[in-house]
Length: 154
Image 1 (cartoon, helix red, strand yellow):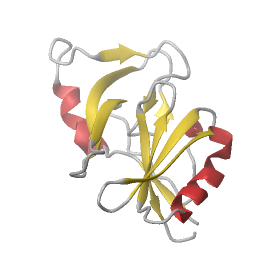
Image 2 (image 1 turned 90 degrees about the horizontal axis):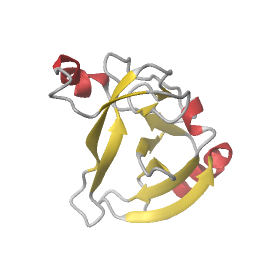
Image 3 (image 1 turned 180 degrees about the vertical axis):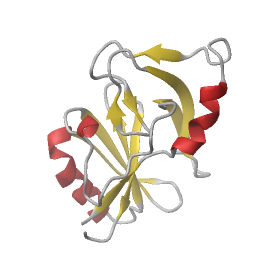
C-alpha cells in the first residue's frame, strides 16, 4: 500500500512571523538536535532555532475523537514536499502512535511502533476495515507528528 505523508502548509502559520515576543509567548529555542519537530518542514529544528509552540486541531471531524494539541510550527520554513512512501528522518527514530480514522472521524485502528517499523505498521493500518487516513503522534510527548493519506504507487 502506497502512502503520502502530509505536512502542514507554511501559509497556515505565516501570521506568526509578524507577532512580537509578547504576543507569541510560547516561542521556544531548540537546545538539542532532536526534540523540536517542525510540522511544516517535517524536520527537527537545529539548536538555536526558534519555533512557536501552538495548539493545532489535527482531528477536526465532528466525532467523539475530535482532537488537537501542541505542535511546533516553524516560521519562515518551507513546506515539506515528500514523494509517495517517503518518510522524513524525524519519524524514523521515535516511538510513534498510529491512529487510523474512518471518513466519519472514528478510530478504526491503533498501534504503537518504533520509527524503524513504521512502514509495516502503516500498511497494516491501511489494511484495517474502514480506515481512510492515519495520524501519527510522537508517543512519548504525545504531540501530533503528521497525517498520512493513501497514495498511488510512484
